[in-house]
Length: 89
View 1 (cartoon, rainbow, N blue to C red):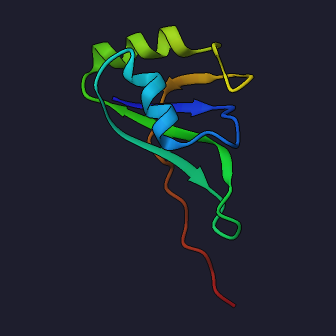
View 2: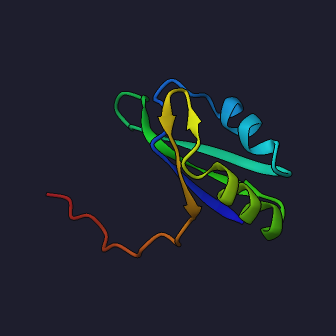
């Protein structure tokens, strides 16, 4: 199950996020989205969990909890929407 995690503290590492979600089940992948230019966190990311039951449990228990002083927004990740290719000038 792929889980969206929003309102992340900008200082959090992927290891910290993996550890927090690992308390609720097996985490297979963590990806914090970063700005292409600066490399700084954009404040959201994705956690992939091994099975749907553990993923739903993590969503239920982590949504609204504080991490690094910020209340997390946690829900099932939606598939990325198709966007038209960028035009180069």
